[in-house]
Length: 159
Image 1 (cartoon, helix red, strand yellow):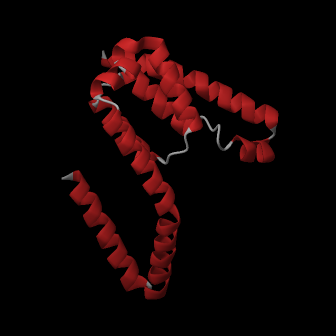
Image 2 (cartoon, one colour):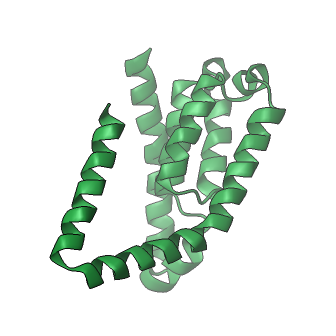
């Protein structure tokens, strides 16, 4: 129901924008279309990799590697994967749900999402260019540690 509400809101906002200024709305739709097609190859590759991983790894294997009983080693595995992966949030959260449904533990999924969103191993060179090496290393280190703190708190609350 909520999804239908969001679609209706988006459509009505688009129609409102179109009635206010047709040219700007068309231009915005063209920019959105171009952005979508630029993201499509990366998005498709990520979805294929995720699909393959979930197809090749049984829920039992996932639970063994990163299940609730895997403890810190499972959290460490997901933290490394999350730190070196560059996935946008709109893909990461459904992936986390799939992992959770396949047997991954709460703390392991939380540390994965936290490191994925906050630790930028792939983007570190760009960040170093703008903020400097010391600041980048400090931010990423604190974000990495904070991910474990959050995972332990959320895992403790949900259990």
